[in-house]
Amino acid sequence: MTALDLVGPLQAFQMADGYLGQPYRIEVCAFTKTVPVAGNLHFSNLVPFEKIVLGPSDTLFVSGCDTHLLTPEFMKRHRPLFAWIRKAWQAGATICSVCTGAFLLAEAGILDGAGCATHWGDTEELQRRYPKIKVRKGVLFVEAGNVFTSAGIASGIDLAIHLL
Image 1 (cartoon, rainbow, N blue to C red):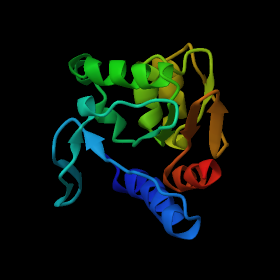
Image 2 (cartoon, one colour):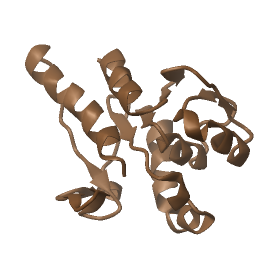
Image 3 (tube, rainbow, N blue to C red):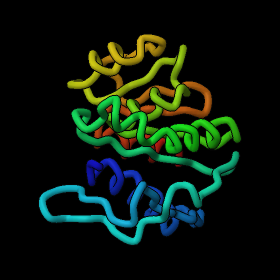
Image 4 (tube, rainbow, N blue to C red):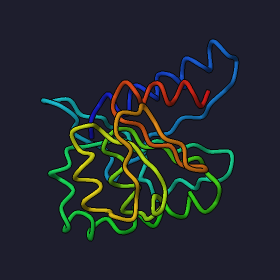
């Protein structure tokens, strides 16, 4: 996981609680209880994603990662994650990706036929892997119904502020 992809939007929502007076329940979930992010830094005490049920009043942010890790084996091994994302989308949750998190939304099948954004260095790879989507270059974020994709770390923060 890219640390700032998670922490940027998370901080925006936490600050909204104080400044806007809107309470947000924030949960950070993952495949495992601990996730390495950079150097020797790890995020821990994470909730297994399967334990979180999302509906129309919820927002899911999917962080990006190194796309070299998103091998066909990885995608096959984590089919339950993609089914979970798809189920949340079908239930009406707002689904967002930051940077290369768009690859995970594409794998879940919720970007088919829609426009999306991702990191500028990964636009061609995303389009190649998922020809049913329309990767847009040079934009901060793209809205397609209840799905939002952002181009990178800073645009993930911009997207969070836009939603707020």
